[in-house]
Amino acid sequence: MKKTDHSMTVDRRRFLSTATGVGTLGLAAGLGLTWPHSQANAQSADGYKIIERPLSTADSSRVEVLEFFWFGCPHCYAFEPSINNWADSKPDYVNFVREAPALNRAWEPHSRTFYAAQALGIVDGMFDELFNTIHKEKRPMRDPKKIAKFVESLDLGVSREEFLKAMDSFGVNASLKRSMSKAIQAGVSGVPSIVINGKYITGNTIAGSHERIIDVINELAAKEHGIG
Image 1 (cartoon, rainbow, N blue to C red):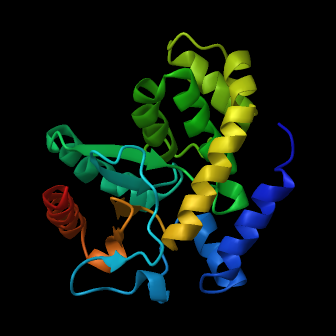
Image 2: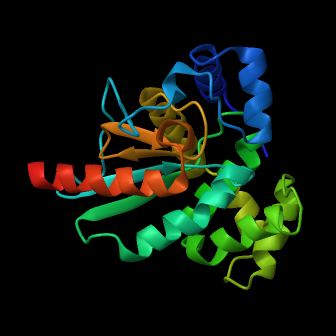
Image 3: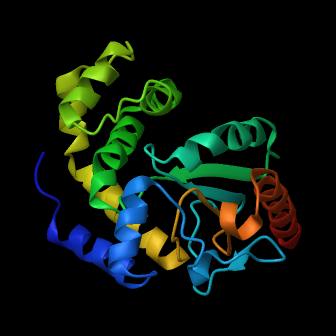
């Protein structure tokens, strides 16, 4: 694949410079950790923080619940059963979406994998398989060629050549830039982070537990639906 373009590198530097510090944050991000001493992630009695500059949402007629995640993050993997159970029974007025910003250079192959799968319409067939391969089978899956071979092995109708091409496509590059911009605007300083209707952010450190995150999502989604 081509090197990361200049604008994305600048976005990543902006993210690093606005959080707890380049050295500490870079190490923590590479390990998939959250940052408990970051102001953005300090625990709140309400279980969420208000986003100073709200994010736009894709469909203003529905309440958007957005999860920022990274395939290599053990915390995201541990949260999967909770968020999946919630998604299976969420209200019809809620639109659940995911973003995979490359907040650290080491995250980029996984971010490109997510957006390539999205572009090719194979997220549902690939998502859990990749998570399990990385965390259950302890295979990092950071080499784009190995990722493409893995995707081909899932028999989703996509060849490794097609997937590699998609990973480096204009559309995927645009998705990476968009996700970085959203993460910076939301004040994301660790994953998983959940944004409700572009206005509120929560996560393990802010809410205190997976169960409380789900409670916060439901409470704020209902509140936002009532406003509409």
